Length: 195
Ligand code: DGI
Ligand code: FE
Ligand code: FE
View 1 (cartoon, protein in one colour):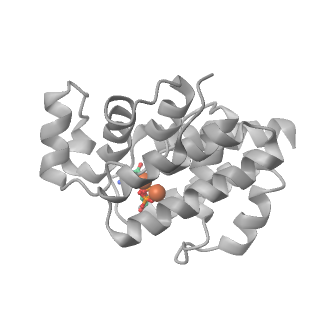
View 2: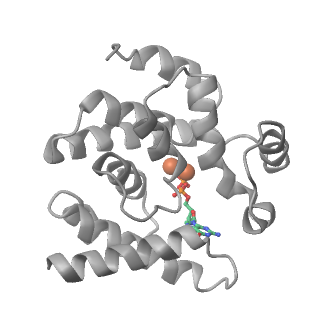
């Protein structure tokens, strides 16, 4: 595999993000690396996915919709109503087209980082979890427990994050992406089976 120039990508990305998002992004990149050490994943790929996961986040919502239409990225009714969700799919598109990422698993980790999905690969799970626990995050409940769990049991941690996300979203009904719901059910069953 070609070496990944994380430094070059980071410099280019910095211009596209506000300061808060950039600092969060670095947190996700390093946390992804730490989780990759625990779970035996490639550190470069984990950092690359963490670095680019929110690369489309600072595109204004109207523009997100426009860009998705232009690039033929399908928009669900929920995404039309809640365009911030599109930053994940549009981010995967940008990662490929603007940052030259070819690795399909890195692209899919970016694509599913907001909702999660059923049967994620370890790399996808790492980015999903790192996004939630990176050091600058401070509003979610149970963060101390979820952070500890992240380094001990990735499936249980993924489940807890999905559960807490659904509880949080439960206060605004009709806004849940089917992917989030399916991911939750999948990890609930998976931890039941594997204890
Ligand atoms: O982009 P970030 O803020 O770093 O993190 P993210 O991409 O994981 O987005 C977090 C938000 O996404 C959080 O407020 C919960 C929300 N979210 C996750 N799943 C769904 C969702 N929002 C809606 N409306 N529907 C979902 O299924
Ligand atoms: Fe995000
Ligand atoms: Fe993020």
